[in-house]
Length: 382
Length: 184
Image (cartoon, rainbow over the protein chains, first blue to last red):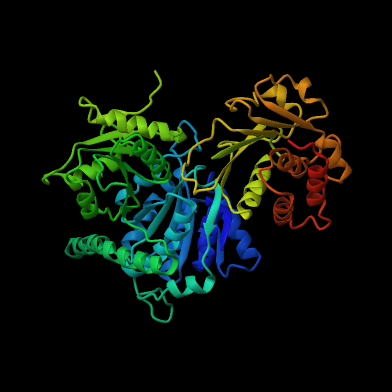
């Protein structure tokens, strides 16, 4: 059934129907409504979960880690400074191979103090071993969280579903909520192995020397690689259930596109209107949404981009002194391949600066110029 | 695509009103999107909320700058903020005010309508003269003037958003305002 719901409340509904058993979170704008709604669900008895109040995001993640190690399905949500405060234990969750699911509402990092969106908070956690999925719509948020629980519990890696502050978190739009029975069929209760159990004491995560640590990292890396196959299988299953088939790299009108806008998050949605407008004017423009950032869909990106005239990457983030982070990832995927197109980077929209249809058309147009620099700051005020 | 902007003061329920109208229009079968002004809200300070309506799926996820419809919940806002900013030529501006439209000084480029929503709200037990709750009343006016949605859908959505309003004061005020407002 479709209901008009904000992104934040969609997150809460997904945790509820996904039957998260332990939720621990600390409120931070713009994520606060997630915490409010989940604690309301629990208090009203319509969500059978333990909500653990804590004094910081670090403790929230630690509570999730403990509960996940005990074998239950766990969930949390945060933003920006809150995610950064979790950093140490994000590594812990991944290295302990615990399938915690987290919704991060993309908010720029201070100072200066800010509450508006960009992707630097989540992309700074790129190398923690968490899977990352960037939502384009509130429907994506809901579906992404359910898919994440299932994938995470199969590959034993934690997963982050990421949505933009305000553009998604505070925007209400229709979301199709499947029936609880349907969700239960797709996502049965977690079956955990190697859990903390007082009846069968064991040590977890103890001191490990060079003889063994290295192989554990090798296994973690392989788990992330294997996640790609699991994601493809689980999204197929979810699509058969709901009619919504998610792709790690999702093209829009790319068939004969000469220029491809590479986009993520809500910007990928706006980009579809930009592509339609350019097509109506006779231009061969397409867009490619990166939904899964970790694992990164390298093969799909190659298949979709090799042989194009150019790729314009829109990055709502920056690795200072380098370039946008999606841009680097795309270049790494295409490096040394026959038919690799020029990859032109455009940083845009940091700190919540709006990215409109006309901005995306201007970026595509700038990329089509022969002398377009390899790296660009779009729309910097003089 | 139809774009709408609501002006209010923090605490007056402009954001709630935008959610209600989006819900009501959606129930009539169109796609909608609604969002508050992106930022920090303080009680009494000017705020805004936005609604998009379309017959096909809405895909743009960016701010809204040139609405065809504007509603102003607080009479004093007309002087405090530029409620006509970006409004398309011949756009409709609905203002909660006891004054005549011509007295507001909003110029000749727009179709301006006024309605004394404060008096009607207070008569329906919604707030007091000094702190009236006008959002649901003005939604009734907005529905009538713009013809963007029917009163039955609006009434159902108002009830859904105020489950604790057992007497249905908000829904009754919305309907009374709908019936009293001049047709656009």
